[in-house]
Image (tube, rainbow, N blue to C red; front, top):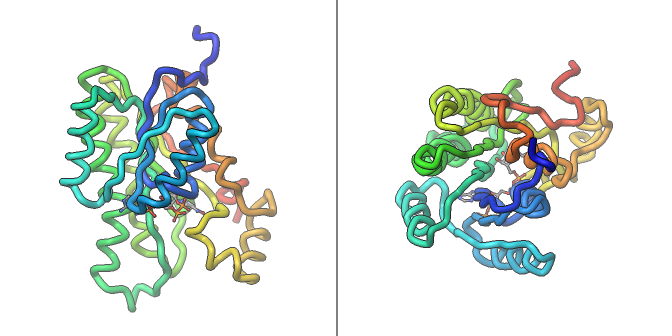
Length: 255
Ligand code: NDP
């Protein structure tokens, strides 16, 4: 048995949407466990700042700026990895968007944007990563779900559908790629303190609702998800496949 089941030394991780928020926390967590990390996002300034800060902490960091909803950009990013001899051992499909609108007011283009960013991108980036992982007989894929992978909330219909899809995409990946040494699992975060939730954390009624519904009685901090990501990226989870782990302060377990 490996001396440190959680050691990621020698592994390379691509984390989509890691210029800020949960993705950034996943990148820091995996880097602290020894992985080289590739940051992704579309905002170059934010990516450069994240790379600089993480490099100053002594981590090995690179940037691959691309839009996860643009298939040609995804394919060209992977072609560049191939050319540079970079193997992606760990993929975290984290990039996501959310906005609130009643379904009767929702444009079809809004629907597609949310589904494309939160769900279709995980398939496209996952497929490109898996083609290479299958050749090498090794890979860890972590898809980021949500409490809405399990529960519906009003005004976030396409997000709920996308995150429900993430749960089943994860199982489909496990079913199809498990025999090739790939484990695909998902994390379902609860209500976390990130920019995505800015309008909610600053709304006293919503803030009170979250605290009253969460057994932990507080919002989650992004860095509190890092351990779950390290576990699912490491040898510690080699026989875990197709699961979604809710890291939500207990919220999904109570009515
Ligand atoms: P943020 O809005 O804080 O960050 C989103 C990240 O995704 C940014 O780095 C952004 O990069 C990137 N991104 C968005 N669209 C694209 C795109 N098309 N291509 C590449 N990168 C993109 O969100 P969070 O950190 O809060 O959320 C991260 C994930 O966690 C999402 O999937 C979200 O649904 C999920 N989640 C979040 C929860 C929360 O409470 N915060 C709860 C449950 C799940 P850039 O700005 O550079 O484009």
